[in-house]
Image (tube, rainbow, N blue to C red; front, side, top):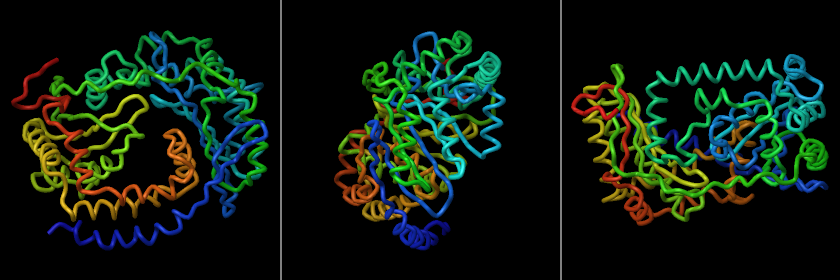
Length: 441
């Protein structure tokens, strides 16, 4: 007998014990005199303040010919600001244990500051300089550009990167979602320092800004720092919205030849936008299908029963302008066809028959019990606060979320599964030399 069923009652009990304090976090709305809003969770047990922020509009807005611009900005904006060159800036942050980082996705441009309370004012001032007066000096820009180019060259040989590129292009063609946030060798070379400066002026603006803060700070203290740090940003920037698009799930199978002993497999079908009323039903359904780790159907059928792949999973992938249900696996070339047959069987079984009562009960217990574990640490909580704002879920979402999960019924899942899962639409990308499947490129 598998150890998983034996462990499940113990794990469930631990999760339920952990749920009580985490869901009791208090999220406060802070509105500054200068008109900036942030969500705050006060925690005076540690001398740390963490701020996570994001600007709506990410790499999907990169201009033609300069794809990767947002990524290059995120990678160089903290390489010197104001009177501090790159070396001086980095030394100051290291000496004071101040962490300033930036990142980018297709839909958002984000950043984070973490500091000890005793260095709080200086840390926020460094962030202000970074957002308002980044230097983009030649040496650090070229150094980082070289690192990105080296990474892109490595991606050309990576089976997973090759598969991801092929899947993006198959689903979205010339839509911005069909591109990589990292850019291409040619587009990265074409980006200038003036492009970087223009990005900051046009895209890092107050009308697209959301902020989450966790730590040892009061609303009054935070309000003053927010106005000083973000108040001088431009009020409005360029339109961050992109056209909505339905992923082109046309059922094709793409096989890309690569001389490796194990094939990389990706598959995709239609998904649900985050504001879709059926999102929670789809979320629970996917947990049972492939998102629940050791307890999911795909893992049980592909890994446990047949030993076809070391790991396999699926997940909902909601973006602002499109949504898919995606999955992946890796297996030896001789067993790719069998692996895909099992995936399609489970895809079809879920679409036609839905889930059983015990599967739904166990999924709800896990998903509601595990939710508080996302709030372990100020960085994770700050990210959650920003993510909830970006998805426009409301400030009470943390308190209400588990009720949405509990409300899902078998009928809901049956309806959503029929809508989302269709093996005739399933797009599959394989990189390797799978036996019995012809190469398409």
